[in-house]
Image: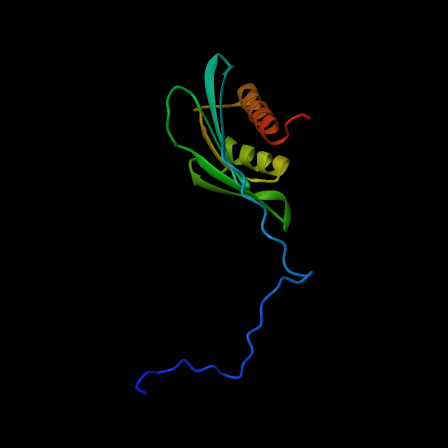
Length: 144
């Protein structure tokens, strides 16, 4: 005959079944959440835009002038009690760098922070820190 027949070797086909020591499945991803808030701070209206992604937070804080002039990322690390911070735009050692580090440490997440408020100091910076912490706490640690 001119037709080729599939050859079957002597190897036995084994079915693969999970064992009791198989790796656990990855947790289901968290659905993105968005929170918008505004507050009066030092006579100025500040807007807070927060996006919660899987294991990370993006927080934009700014006034009437919209933009992305400042961007920092803080990431918890097992090598140090303080999260590592990288400045992607803006001042290297500015208020946003410090705030992103504090929020990352407090909530144990990677925090992208954009602080677009010129000349923010003292009481106004403290108010921004408190409002940011409140918004994140309400989102991440809802009361029972």
